[in-house]
Length: 342
Image (cartoon, rainbow, N blue to C red):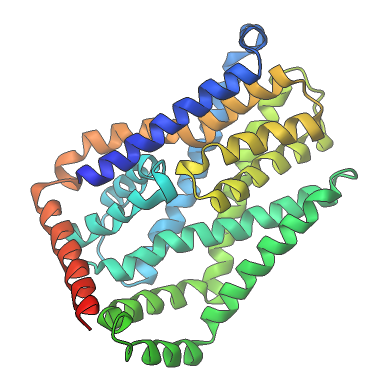
Protein backbone atom coordinates (compact mmCIF):
# COMPACT_ATOMS: atom_id res chain seq x y z
CA UNK A 1 0.00 0.00 0.00
CA UNK A 2 2.90 2.35 0.74
CA UNK A 3 4.02 1.94 -2.86
CA UNK A 4 0.63 3.15 -4.14
CA UNK A 5 0.63 6.03 -1.66
CA UNK A 6 4.01 7.12 -3.02
CA UNK A 7 2.70 6.98 -6.59
CA UNK A 8 -0.27 9.22 -5.73
CA UNK A 9 1.87 11.68 -3.74
CA UNK A 10 4.35 11.82 -6.65
CA UNK A 11 1.51 12.75 -9.01
CA UNK A 12 0.19 15.44 -6.67
CA UNK A 13 3.65 16.99 -6.25
CA UNK A 14 4.13 16.93 -10.02
CA UNK A 15 0.74 18.63 -10.44
CA UNK A 16 1.73 21.35 -7.96
CA UNK A 17 4.93 22.01 -9.89
CA UNK A 18 2.99 22.28 -13.16
CA UNK A 19 0.52 24.66 -11.47
CA UNK A 20 3.44 26.88 -10.38
CA UNK A 21 5.02 26.67 -13.84
CA UNK A 22 1.82 27.73 -15.64
CA UNK A 23 1.30 30.56 -13.16
CA UNK A 24 4.84 31.87 -13.70
CA UNK A 25 4.86 31.69 -17.52
CA UNK A 26 1.40 33.27 -17.68
CA UNK A 27 2.40 36.24 -15.50
CA UNK A 28 1.17 36.16 -11.90
CA UNK A 29 -0.10 39.75 -12.07
CA UNK A 30 -2.25 39.05 -15.14
CA UNK A 31 -3.70 35.87 -13.63
CA UNK A 32 -4.54 37.80 -10.45
CA UNK A 33 -6.26 40.49 -12.50
CA UNK A 34 -8.37 37.96 -14.42
CA UNK A 35 -9.19 36.11 -11.20
CA UNK A 36 -10.51 39.30 -9.62
CA UNK A 37 -12.74 40.03 -12.62
CA UNK A 38 -14.00 36.45 -13.11
CA UNK A 39 -17.67 35.78 -12.12
CA UNK A 40 -16.92 32.98 -9.67
CA UNK A 41 -20.58 31.98 -9.37
CA UNK A 42 -20.10 30.33 -12.78
CA UNK A 43 -18.01 27.65 -11.08
CA UNK A 44 -21.16 26.23 -9.47
CA UNK A 45 -22.76 25.05 -12.76
CA UNK A 46 -19.32 24.12 -14.12
CA UNK A 47 -18.57 21.84 -11.16
CA UNK A 48 -22.14 20.54 -11.34
CA UNK A 49 -21.61 19.56 -14.99
CA UNK A 50 -18.47 17.70 -13.99
CA UNK A 51 -20.43 15.76 -11.37
CA UNK A 52 -23.02 14.77 -13.99
CA UNK A 53 -20.02 13.61 -16.06
CA UNK A 54 -19.04 11.36 -13.13
CA UNK A 55 -22.58 9.98 -12.94
CA UNK A 56 -22.55 8.97 -16.60
CA UNK A 57 -19.12 7.40 -16.26
CA UNK A 58 -20.26 5.55 -13.13
CA UNK A 59 -23.09 3.94 -15.12
CA UNK A 60 -20.45 2.76 -17.58
CA UNK A 61 -18.24 1.42 -14.77
CA UNK A 62 -21.09 -0.52 -13.14
CA UNK A 63 -22.26 -1.82 -16.54
CA UNK A 64 -18.75 -3.13 -17.22
CA UNK A 65 -18.59 -4.87 -13.83
CA UNK A 66 -21.78 -6.76 -14.61
CA UNK A 67 -20.49 -7.52 -18.08
CA UNK A 68 -17.36 -9.28 -16.79
CA UNK A 69 -19.36 -11.32 -14.29
CA UNK A 70 -18.86 -9.34 -11.08
CA UNK A 71 -22.37 -9.74 -9.70
CA UNK A 72 -23.93 -8.58 -6.45
CA UNK A 73 -21.83 -5.43 -6.04
CA UNK A 74 -23.98 -2.90 -4.20
CA UNK A 75 -24.39 0.51 -5.80
CA UNK A 76 -22.89 2.11 -2.70
CA UNK A 77 -19.73 -0.01 -2.84
CA UNK A 78 -19.49 0.37 -6.60
CA UNK A 79 -19.84 4.16 -6.41
CA UNK A 80 -17.36 4.40 -3.52
CA UNK A 81 -14.75 2.36 -5.44
CA UNK A 82 -15.37 4.36 -8.61
CA UNK A 83 -15.01 7.77 -6.94
CA UNK A 84 -12.01 6.61 -4.90
CA UNK A 85 -10.38 5.94 -8.26
CA UNK A 86 -10.17 9.70 -8.97
CA UNK A 87 -7.12 10.33 -6.76
CA UNK A 88 -5.65 6.99 -7.89
CA UNK A 89 -5.68 8.32 -11.48
CA UNK A 90 -3.24 11.04 -10.40
CA UNK A 91 -0.48 8.40 -10.14
CA UNK A 92 2.16 8.02 -12.90
CA UNK A 93 0.58 6.14 -15.78
CA UNK A 94 -2.52 5.85 -13.54
CA UNK A 95 -0.82 2.74 -12.15
CA UNK A 96 -2.49 3.05 -8.75
CA UNK A 97 -5.90 2.43 -10.35
CA UNK A 98 -5.09 -1.28 -10.09
CA UNK A 99 -6.12 -0.87 -6.44
CA UNK A 100 -9.75 -0.83 -7.60
CA UNK A 101 -9.34 -4.41 -8.80
CA UNK A 102 -7.70 -5.45 -5.50
CA UNK A 103 -10.59 -3.87 -3.56
CA UNK A 104 -13.14 -5.79 -5.67
CA UNK A 105 -11.28 -9.04 -5.11
CA UNK A 106 -11.10 -8.42 -1.37
CA UNK A 107 -14.80 -7.49 -1.04
CA UNK A 108 -16.41 -9.75 -3.64
CA UNK A 109 -13.80 -12.33 -4.64
CA UNK A 110 -13.62 -11.05 -8.23
CA UNK A 111 -10.34 -12.13 -9.90
CA UNK A 112 -8.02 -9.19 -10.51
CA UNK A 113 -7.40 -10.41 -14.07
CA UNK A 114 -11.15 -10.21 -14.79
CA UNK A 115 -11.64 -6.65 -13.51
CA UNK A 116 -8.41 -5.01 -14.70
CA UNK A 117 -9.80 -4.79 -18.27
CA UNK A 118 -12.66 -2.64 -16.90
CA UNK A 119 -10.17 0.15 -16.18
CA UNK A 120 -8.63 -0.27 -19.63
CA UNK A 121 -12.04 -0.40 -21.33
CA UNK A 122 -13.06 2.85 -19.62
CA UNK A 123 -10.03 4.52 -21.19
CA UNK A 124 -10.69 2.90 -24.57
CA UNK A 125 -14.35 4.00 -24.76
CA UNK A 126 -13.37 7.51 -23.59
CA UNK A 127 -10.73 7.55 -26.33
CA UNK A 128 -13.35 6.72 -28.96
CA UNK A 129 -15.65 9.41 -27.55
CA UNK A 130 -13.07 12.23 -27.51
CA UNK A 131 -11.89 11.36 -31.02
CA UNK A 132 -15.46 11.67 -32.28
CA UNK A 133 -15.86 14.98 -30.45
CA UNK A 134 -12.52 16.26 -31.78
CA UNK A 135 -13.56 15.41 -35.33
CA UNK A 136 -16.94 17.08 -34.75
CA UNK A 137 -15.24 20.24 -33.51
CA UNK A 138 -12.78 20.33 -36.43
CA UNK A 139 -15.61 19.92 -38.94
CA UNK A 140 -17.32 22.97 -37.45
CA UNK A 141 -14.18 25.14 -37.39
CA UNK A 142 -12.53 26.34 -40.57
CA UNK A 143 -9.00 27.06 -39.33
CA UNK A 144 -7.96 23.99 -37.31
CA UNK A 145 -7.23 21.43 -40.03
CA UNK A 146 -3.74 20.89 -38.60
CA UNK A 147 -5.27 18.64 -35.92
CA UNK A 148 -6.60 16.05 -38.37
CA UNK A 149 -3.39 13.90 -38.39
CA UNK A 150 -3.57 13.43 -34.62
CA UNK A 151 -7.22 12.38 -34.87
CA UNK A 152 -6.65 9.99 -37.77
CA UNK A 153 -3.57 8.32 -36.26
CA UNK A 154 -5.16 7.91 -32.83
CA UNK A 155 -8.41 6.70 -34.36
CA UNK A 156 -6.57 4.19 -36.54
CA UNK A 157 -4.70 2.70 -33.58
CA UNK A 158 -7.87 2.39 -31.47
CA UNK A 159 -9.82 0.87 -34.37
CA UNK A 160 -7.01 -1.66 -35.01
CA UNK A 161 -7.01 -2.70 -31.33
CA UNK A 162 -10.79 -3.11 -31.24
CA UNK A 163 -10.79 -5.11 -34.49
CA UNK A 164 -7.99 -7.37 -33.25
CA UNK A 165 -9.90 -8.18 -30.06
CA UNK A 166 -13.00 -8.99 -32.15
CA UNK A 167 -11.21 -11.94 -33.82
CA UNK A 168 -11.71 -14.30 -30.91
CA UNK A 169 -10.42 -17.42 -32.62
CA UNK A 170 -7.20 -15.66 -33.64
CA UNK A 171 -6.67 -14.32 -30.12
CA UNK A 172 -7.36 -17.71 -28.50
CA UNK A 173 -4.85 -19.32 -30.88
CA UNK A 174 -2.30 -16.66 -30.01
CA UNK A 175 -2.92 -17.16 -26.28
CA UNK A 176 -2.52 -20.93 -26.69
CA UNK A 177 0.83 -20.37 -28.40
CA UNK A 178 1.94 -17.92 -25.70
CA UNK A 179 1.01 -20.40 -22.95
CA UNK A 180 3.73 -22.76 -24.24
CA UNK A 181 6.48 -20.19 -23.77
CA UNK A 182 8.61 -20.61 -20.60
CA UNK A 183 8.16 -17.03 -19.37
CA UNK A 184 4.70 -15.88 -20.47
CA UNK A 185 3.24 -19.35 -19.95
CA UNK A 186 3.33 -18.82 -16.19
CA UNK A 187 0.68 -16.13 -16.62
CA UNK A 188 -1.35 -17.96 -19.30
CA UNK A 189 -4.49 -18.40 -17.19
CA UNK A 190 -4.51 -14.78 -16.04
CA UNK A 191 -3.97 -13.55 -19.59
CA UNK A 192 -6.86 -15.70 -20.82
CA UNK A 193 -9.20 -14.34 -18.12
CA UNK A 194 -8.03 -10.81 -18.99
CA UNK A 195 -8.80 -11.40 -22.68
CA UNK A 196 -12.22 -12.95 -22.07
CA UNK A 197 -13.24 -9.87 -20.06
CA UNK A 198 -11.80 -7.54 -22.70
CA UNK A 199 -13.59 -9.40 -25.51
CA UNK A 200 -17.00 -8.91 -23.89
CA UNK A 201 -16.45 -5.19 -23.51
CA UNK A 202 -15.34 -4.51 -27.10
CA UNK A 203 -18.29 -6.29 -28.70
CA UNK A 204 -20.02 -3.68 -30.87
CA UNK A 205 -23.25 -3.20 -28.84
CA UNK A 206 -21.31 -2.87 -25.58
CA UNK A 207 -18.71 -0.55 -27.10
CA UNK A 208 -21.41 1.66 -28.64
CA UNK A 209 -23.19 2.01 -25.29
CA UNK A 210 -19.97 2.81 -23.43
CA UNK A 211 -18.75 5.24 -26.09
CA UNK A 212 -22.17 6.91 -26.12
CA UNK A 213 -21.98 7.51 -22.37
CA UNK A 214 -18.43 8.79 -22.81
CA UNK A 215 -19.60 11.09 -25.58
CA UNK A 216 -22.24 12.71 -23.37
CA UNK A 217 -19.83 12.97 -20.44
CA UNK A 218 -17.09 14.68 -22.45
CA UNK A 219 -19.55 17.09 -24.10
CA UNK A 220 -20.38 18.31 -20.59
CA UNK A 221 -16.68 19.01 -20.03
CA UNK A 222 -16.69 21.02 -23.25
CA UNK A 223 -19.65 23.04 -21.97
CA UNK A 224 -17.69 23.67 -18.77
CA UNK A 225 -14.72 25.15 -20.66
CA UNK A 226 -17.19 27.13 -22.79
CA UNK A 227 -18.62 28.72 -19.63
CA UNK A 228 -15.11 29.54 -18.39
CA UNK A 229 -14.38 31.35 -21.66
CA UNK A 230 -17.65 33.28 -21.42
CA UNK A 231 -16.66 34.27 -17.89
CA UNK A 232 -13.44 35.69 -19.36
CA UNK A 233 -15.45 37.91 -21.68
CA UNK A 234 -15.46 35.83 -24.88
CA UNK A 235 -18.60 36.30 -27.03
CA UNK A 236 -20.89 33.26 -26.69
CA UNK A 237 -21.87 31.24 -29.76
CA UNK A 238 -21.42 27.98 -31.63
CA UNK A 239 -17.88 28.79 -32.72
CA UNK A 240 -16.70 29.40 -29.16
CA UNK A 241 -18.35 26.16 -28.01
CA UNK A 242 -16.56 24.07 -30.63
CA UNK A 243 -13.25 25.75 -29.79
CA UNK A 244 -13.79 24.88 -26.12
CA UNK A 245 -14.75 21.32 -27.08
CA UNK A 246 -11.61 21.03 -29.21
CA UNK A 247 -9.40 22.23 -26.36
CA UNK A 248 -10.75 19.79 -23.77
CA UNK A 249 -10.90 16.83 -26.19
CA UNK A 250 -7.32 17.30 -27.39
CA UNK A 251 -6.20 17.61 -23.77
CA UNK A 252 -7.68 14.17 -23.00
CA UNK A 253 -5.86 12.66 -26.00
CA UNK A 254 -2.56 14.35 -25.08
CA UNK A 255 -2.85 13.28 -21.44
CA UNK A 256 -3.59 9.66 -22.38
CA UNK A 257 -0.70 9.44 -24.83
CA UNK A 258 1.77 11.04 -22.39
CA UNK A 259 1.13 8.56 -19.58
CA UNK A 260 1.87 11.32 -17.05
CA UNK A 261 -0.04 11.32 -13.72
CA UNK A 262 -3.59 12.39 -14.55
CA UNK A 263 -2.29 13.77 -17.85
CA UNK A 264 -0.54 16.50 -15.82
CA UNK A 265 1.66 18.67 -18.00
CA UNK A 266 0.52 17.32 -21.37
CA UNK A 267 -3.16 18.14 -20.84
CA UNK A 268 -2.39 21.53 -19.26
CA UNK A 269 -0.11 22.62 -22.10
CA UNK A 270 -2.57 21.36 -24.71
CA UNK A 271 -5.48 23.36 -23.28
CA UNK A 272 -3.34 26.47 -22.97
CA UNK A 273 -1.92 26.09 -26.47
CA UNK A 274 -5.34 25.65 -28.09
CA UNK A 275 -6.79 28.59 -26.17
CA UNK A 276 -3.97 30.83 -27.41
CA UNK A 277 -3.74 29.58 -31.02
CA UNK A 278 -7.42 28.84 -31.75
CA UNK A 279 -9.48 30.97 -29.35
CA UNK A 280 -7.04 33.90 -29.47
CA UNK A 281 -6.60 34.46 -25.73
CA UNK A 282 -3.52 36.23 -24.45
CA UNK A 283 -1.05 34.30 -22.31
CA UNK A 284 -2.52 35.49 -19.00
CA UNK A 285 -6.10 34.61 -19.99
CA UNK A 286 -5.04 31.22 -21.35
CA UNK A 287 -3.08 30.45 -18.19
CA UNK A 288 -5.98 31.38 -15.91
CA UNK A 289 -8.50 29.43 -18.03
CA UNK A 290 -6.18 26.41 -18.08
CA UNK A 291 -5.85 26.41 -14.29
CA UNK A 292 -9.65 26.54 -13.91
CA UNK A 293 -10.28 23.87 -16.56
CA UNK A 294 -7.73 21.50 -15.06
CA UNK A 295 -9.07 22.02 -11.55
CA UNK A 296 -12.49 20.94 -12.82
CA UNK A 297 -11.14 18.14 -15.02
CA UNK A 298 -8.70 16.59 -12.51
CA UNK A 299 -8.25 18.20 -9.10
CA UNK A 300 -11.95 18.52 -8.22
CA UNK A 301 -12.18 14.74 -8.63
CA UNK A 302 -8.99 14.15 -6.63
CA UNK A 303 -10.44 16.24 -3.80
CA UNK A 304 -13.87 14.55 -3.78
CA UNK A 305 -12.32 11.10 -4.25
CA UNK A 306 -9.94 11.64 -1.33
CA UNK A 307 -12.85 12.60 0.93
CA UNK A 308 -14.82 9.49 -0.14
CA UNK A 309 -11.73 7.27 0.35
CA UNK A 310 -11.35 8.65 3.88
CA UNK A 311 -15.03 8.19 4.76
CA UNK A 312 -15.09 4.61 3.42
CA UNK A 313 -11.54 3.68 4.48
CA UNK A 314 -12.66 0.89 6.82
CA UNK A 315 -14.77 -0.70 4.10
CA UNK A 316 -12.41 -0.21 1.14
CA UNK A 317 -8.98 -0.42 2.78
CA UNK A 318 -9.21 -2.98 5.63
CA UNK A 319 -6.12 -4.97 6.77
CA UNK A 320 -7.29 -7.89 4.62
CA UNK A 321 -6.62 -5.79 1.49
CA UNK A 322 -2.89 -5.87 2.31
CA UNK A 323 -3.09 -9.67 2.33
CA UNK A 324 -4.72 -9.72 -1.12
CA UNK A 325 -2.05 -7.39 -2.54
CA UNK A 326 0.72 -9.47 -0.93
CA UNK A 327 -0.64 -12.68 -2.45
CA UNK A 328 -0.82 -11.16 -5.93
CA UNK A 329 2.65 -9.66 -5.58
CA UNK A 330 4.15 -12.91 -4.33
CA UNK A 331 2.55 -14.77 -7.24
CA UNK A 332 4.15 -12.32 -9.66
CA UNK A 333 7.54 -12.64 -7.98
CA UNK A 334 7.33 -16.46 -8.00
CA UNK A 335 6.51 -16.47 -11.72
CA UNK A 336 9.43 -14.12 -12.41
CA UNK A 337 11.84 -16.31 -10.44
CA UNK A 338 10.62 -19.44 -12.25
CA UNK A 339 11.12 -17.64 -15.56
CA UNK A 340 14.70 -16.70 -14.62
CA UNK A 341 15.45 -20.30 -13.66
CA UNK A 342 14.01 -21.52 -16.96
